[in-house]
Length: 514
Image (cartoon, rainbow, N blue to C red; front, side, top):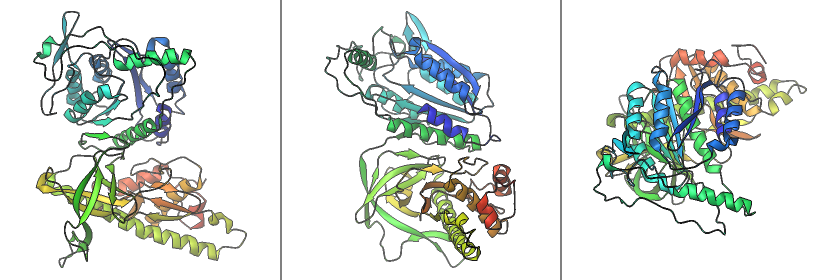
């Protein structure tokens, strides 16, 4: 999973800010595996270091789980580089032994500030997290919990510090070995024990005991499997966060929990469409032929995926194909909620217009070409953008009593990203990648250098590519906060290499042809 994450980040262009990687392990103490190693080339040195650490017996799980040790070391690693953007990926397989059994019931309630170990009073994990948030303007906290024991505390930390909580649910298969009795502390969630009276006991977490059981089962020939598919999805989501931060996005994240599957919540909803009023202003209106709140839909409690700008939820409604609902992953002011979705719909509508022109240009060009040349464009798939609609949900727990989501069809197949709104270009040599880059170039010239469609992502095969969540750059900066204008267009061309599609369509060279 980490290897896949490194590969995704290595696809970023060399001109993007260098990603520096530090890694550490922790239990009651921490151990730094590497410090600020540059992610360059193919990442050989980082992969080699991580592999060596994985095979080192000293790094195997043992003893208790002490969150404070991990966050203290992370804070120390980041302390000397206050101008850097910092993302902390914190992975734990158990409940913290240096914190009370249960966190505060509400994230607005401060957590304990200290704990005791061997008679000494030490700062708790929150002390170090708050230190990083104070020092680093661009700070993101990603928490990954493997087993249920740590869920309550890690969800609290995500809510308290505007982080993202991931629960991949990597469950060990059952084995025919009795689980040893787990020794735990006696205080419960209703304990009146003061913060400073929480004593760290020399006990093993349930997860550590399970791992010991795993070793015995392995020696006995029993088989235990770890299903890592959801973990890969988790690291893909974190990779999108890193990419967004490296590209310059600077907004406060919502605190969310990413779960592949979660309970569905029912809503009354209104489908809305974009319309222009008598003064020429674009506004969302109730869809023609429908009434307000007449639709019955269900939306997952937690997002199952996350992109650079949006959280993605599962959505169901009667007589409709499987759908997804998207909302900003960043905190947006109340009066700007619909503005965010207006930007989304405008981008997708305009991108669809350019996609239709691109398909027509490919078709017309093939008709004009000599027969021996035609095969060059025969392999170019048709491209299309999903159509996004906005739904207004009745939700009493949201400001104004409504929640707004962008809704579109669920994409089938392997999701890929071919470029972004900065200078990232997927370096793959496949036809889908060439089509995406040529399309961005085509939109620039077709608009007479006034606009460009970027952030090309979605699914595809040899026949068709279905894109979603595009971004447009425009000279007039008409397409929202991610529209970087002429600067964004120049960024694209700084790494773009014209391919055979650019050449066959007669696009003006903006780089060396490959």
